[in-house]
Length: 161
Image (tube, rainbow, N blue to C red):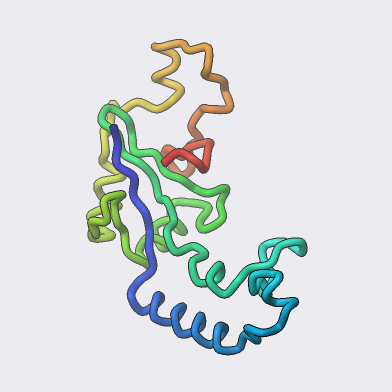
């Protein structure tokens, strides 16, 4: 059993996002059949084929999974295919720019979280390569190997909460 950790925005960032959301909603023509039929998805999304609603924009990046700690294992970071950060320095900047919570909603001091994650099960904690060399499995393949970025154990998957 493990514990997942997330970065959420600061109170000020949420207030700014909220003000923007209210402005966008106030600007909607709620009687326009075209906009209603698109569920008010009027904001260009991540690709030319996607559209977002004001609510989508408000919640985007609101709850970013940072990683997971598990007994016996080194802390495993989630780099989200480098969407929010791509190395140790930008990861720590991202963490410090918001707040850290665990999966139970407990707020954790950013610096205490970083220290805990760096020290978790060091130096003898397992990673996928070490574990599966000792415990072969028919379900394991090299695509499940961890990646190491700046000495951090990073999951090869972005969906591992």
